[in-house]
Image 1 (cartoon, rainbow, N blue to C red):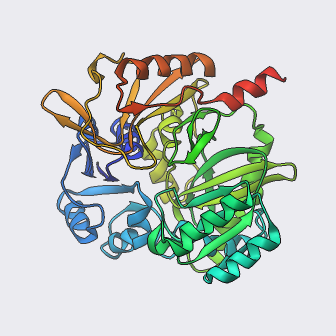
Image 2: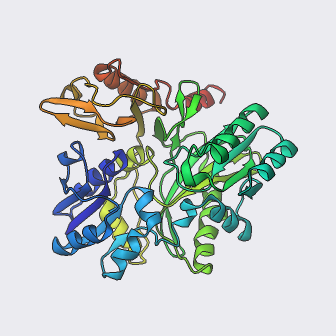
Length: 423
């Protein structure tokens, strides 16, 4: 069969790489793809927001399964366009994708179906929001309601940070229209983890968990980014906690979406915090996480495409996972998540060892050279017998291709290593 991956980032590279390994698949296409993705898929220059052109391509090339990577096309309704033309696509409808497209929608679902999350209030008026902030104090979390490329969240530890954050979102329009409505919510303390599941209506098939590192700099310092690295599994989160999260969060959310008339199909991503009162939802996404996908899929030993088809057919796939630990670290442009320069030359990527899994996020090929072409440039994943050996291997790989134009965190997985010290 032929498979189409919509998108062109590191997550989509991992999806295309995994799909290309399936015994069911003849050809993987990626639209628009990238120079890096072209190693595992045929890239077609169609914009990911041109739904009719993508559907035309799928019809013409007998695409039997389309997988959508980024949130923007899902929230804008790509699945509805494909479904209307009888095309097989794994992703939520426009109505269901609101679970990521609107933080207020997600919070209302959680409130209605008693899904554990933080207390919150939603505001469209700056003065009212400001008054509320004064009343509740810090630490507090501010979220732009709409899509902001993973950057629309401000974790304010002081009142000064909270006031500045609210002004940036609502007055200065830092996240444009995404911030015309703001969700102010309780700051949750604990251990964070990412739980993704393949969902079709009330059927929920959880994947192994990962932990993402959102802050730009080591020791979890600096601004929030789209993610600087991840690892899987997460040994300090017990399986009983994951099972509890599936039972109290994922299953009731999937059932609630069916009740609401916007049944969810696709990847439901739950960003969770293990608090003293058990796991609670920080956020939902309507697609695979980035960079978590780049460490979870390399550990999946089952046929990825067969698994997705089983979920779409209402069957229960049995997933097999590698015992190894995957550590993935992002190489980012200096200045990210703020402003940065593009077209900076990278070291020799071909010199990386075969065991290094290289997922391109923001690169461009120029003759024999690889150049930077985004904030998150690429991610290297290594599988190891333990977290430390996998991380050491990744750090060694990245050091060999690092230049002054890029940086990476050398402490990905430090929560797990610290937890193991105290056992």
